[in-house]
Amino acid sequence: MSRKYLLSLLLVGALVISVVASGCIGGSQTPTSSPTKTQQVQELEIYHWWTAGGEKEAFDALAKKFEKKYPNIKIKANPVSGGGGVNLKMVLQSLMLAGKPPDTFQVHAGYEMARYIKANQLTPIDDIWTEDMKKNYPKVIQQMVIFNNHYYAVPINVHRANVIWYNKQIFKKYGIDPSSIKTIDDLFAVAEKLKENGVTPFALGDRNKWPATQVFEVMLVAVGGVDYYEKFINGEISANDPTLKKVLEYFVKYVEYSNPDHAAKTWDEACALVYKGEAAMTLMGDWANGYFKAKGWKPNVDYGAIPIPAGVYDLVIDTFVLPAKAAHPNAAKKWLSFIGTVEAQNTFNPIKGSIPPRKDAPADPYDPIQKSFIKELSSSETKLIPSIAHGSAVPEAFLADLNDIISELATSKDVNKAATEIINAMKKDLLPNKIKEWHLS
Image (cartoon, rainbow, N blue to C red; front, side):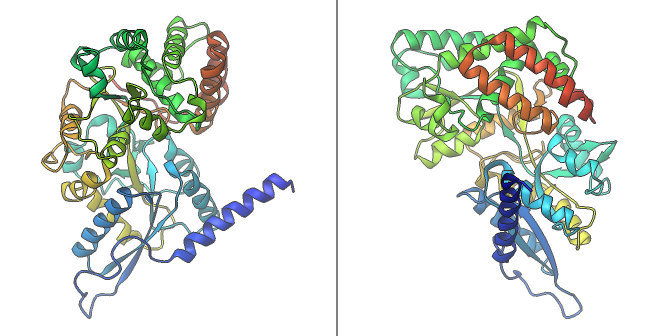
């Protein structure tokens, strides 16, 4: 046994022990109202990765409301720290192999669920998806949780990946009208103007690789359009594709307009450059909205948001699922049904900083930027796409390849090499692992 493998086992073991030892964390510790004598209190074990400020409070509020609705069910929440569920995946792997999964757990919609479905570790939940839910969830969001013609998850929120966040004071100083920015070429024209005035146009922090891949996916839809994006995630791009080369050239252009130390910074450190006025803009998901508000900035007063390209919504969605060997499947089904309601989503999302996936959820509790996003999400004119960088659109093995290729491209600027490597990775790790055909148009 190699030392590296042994260390990996020890890390997973330590994570599992720490989670088990944590007991009941998050959620309300006692039911709001006592169950009757004839009712037996059930336990509902939930694993998630919402441990930071804001997101933890959002889950706790959701759990409290659920326990009020079902006083005979007590939530045992086991949060595992690690952005995007990196550590949670290792914990779940150990629990699944031991045949002792939680009753439900958080996972991104799309291909991140595939590992569990292929291993028969999840139970379809077609009975949870009522006609009301099907009517009020956008079709592409439903696609993201359907595998082999069965529903496997219920989305609780929607984040948006294709947003330019900008410092309004800088835009005002240089006479930039944000409403004039609709396309990627519009954006680069503004970047050139800022650069000529000695301002760093874009803040980038790709130390963890995924922010660079997120920029790439935005360039992919901004340059190629939704139809080309669909072809890419379905693995239908051929060698020497001229559009792919142009996408990569635009990615390099974005990097060249960014801070030189981007590879040493994280996404939130890039946001800090915008907050401090050291850069004018950053391309980041709408969790950046929460970052700026936590700093005391007011949306549409101190900072603004520009979807790029206009008319496209790049989806990052958190869901919960039903493990095949869940100890308390009936309690888990009640949870899944609950989080699919307007009541649950408008309890959770205003605190979390995301928006509800249901089109019929009132927008009253949300800030002006979120309200505009809710309106766009519900519009039949908006094109919805699943995120590549956040595990939804492509198999995990291909995403790992792509992260490495794009991260290297950010430094090397070798477009031809990156294009060849992407095509080879599609053949090696996308097509052999493909279990879904996307239909975005």
